[in-house]
Image 1 (spheres, rainbow, N blue to C red):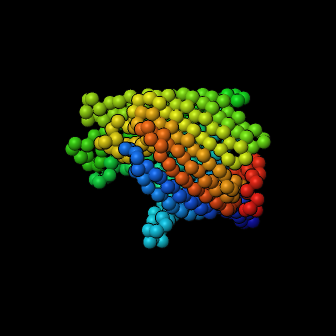
Image 2: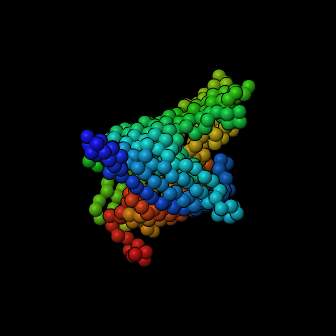
Image 3: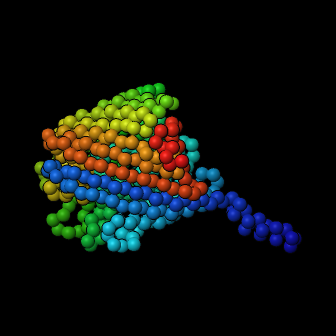
Length: 355
């Protein structure tokens, strides 16, 4: 009897250890973003630069469940500090071939990569890379639907409440596809409420359809068209309601790691409440305020391996009958058992330098 009880105790304490799987990863993300926007009425020239160090650990069980936690350290070169910003990654994840569920604080780029800069401008992705909320998705890369919540501001005496509610999806069949991205940004009052401040909303929905090709010879391309509609409101005033709508088109092509991505918006001026709320209500590119806007990105993948991706791009912005320039250089590197980087399908001639 004693031996049986001892065996049960041993099994009780040792089985969880065998059932659990431990993982780790250390990542580094570098960004350099030079903006020459002197001619613009809506955006300022600036040079954004930063380095993120992101060590991460995980405990998994039952093949589909895991807890992940880590620290995010931002170093801004030239600021004279060892660390300029500290944030925390911590979330629960359930992942199966047909379902992904996350709750907590986790990287936005891993779940909302299908949202373009009409929704999240580059500086948001550079300095606020974490979502803090819930993400749920059913389906695969070619056919999926997701819904998500991101709490971006908790109400205090000096801080207003704000959060995102979003949905997106995609259907693909052969070369043809249709997709959509949307969110509602809710910008509310502080706690306690301040007299004169109210509630505002910014809703955006983009829907497109087109064709996409990805060949084994390193050639890929995409052509699509659709619409971008919105709903912008300041509840304090009866006339502060706007419903901008416009035509959107996209054309991409890439071969051997050199490519171009082009996006067009033509329609009503957007961000009509920007003079009151600015970036507090609008998280997308300010160039949409002009009513017509074209972004043409030309890039080269300098390194594209399982653990390292390096990319340089020159972006041309056509807005207000003016041509503006932007240069970007990004590097992402990671090592560890949790690393799931992309491996280049085609070897580029210049990548042999880094082997």
